Image (cartoon, rainbow, N blue to C red; front, top):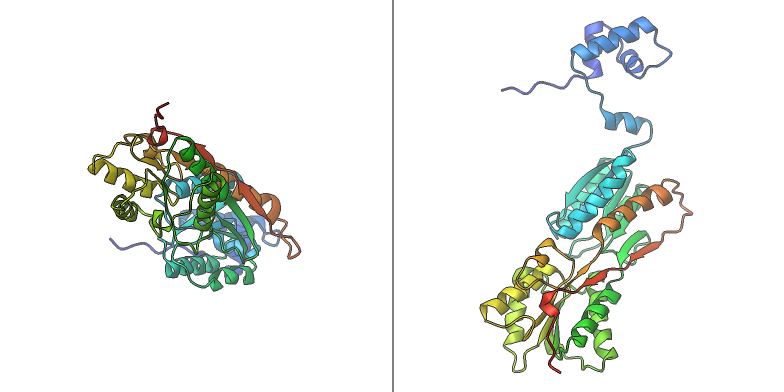
Length: 345
């Protein structure tokens, strides 16, 4: 079936033998067009199923109530909840969201940002991909006078508004909890250290060990174990050590923690008695695994609302003299069965 061509003001003008500018004025209810012509244009537009190009109209008025959002992965609970929080606020304000996924690839992130710039969005909200590269595309956003808000994973040297979690504190509390449960050799699954959040979580891990007089052991720290598959590979390596860990903190995500749990289950290792497991992000599945997984809740829906409110409260009156600020949200440790060890007295 052949797709019908969209009706334009030029089609209406041709049917009525009017100038396109006259049709445009009539549709905009301009006082320069008499009532009879307006009525005729509106009647013809309805008959021809004309729909106004809202984006073009808004651009002519110097306003586009559309916000672009770039996330690494839409199917992760943290990012989907961010989007839900954003949408709850933006919808009430009459703004639309365009959602893009970088799939953790820098080149794809650049393409997403460039597409949003070409859409003339009012703001771009972004959490950067794990694959790193230069940040020229983000500078381009600012150069085009488009407002930019970074969240969670941010380019620290770029002077923009940022909404982040207190990752270091959350990791410190998670590792301290493991120590309080009697675990002695606590391993860390790290994410890429050129990403701010993973550096901060490692710093929290190290601080908790030092605070409790535990040695820092390089053999217990596994780099780039930030997916379920990589978490499983790292766990096998850790458990094959002459002196394996008795707890693993998957600071990267609950997916890597799930990889740890699957390996432990396959090897018949008792969790939490022989091996404690703590994840990060409070994915829904952490409540229903056996045992349920201790994790860190980042209050992602609330974070999304905070980002949106920052745009409306602070950035709608945007001037070059406005000082960008950092908003930090404190996550919460959620203790579940995977670390509730029974310590013999």
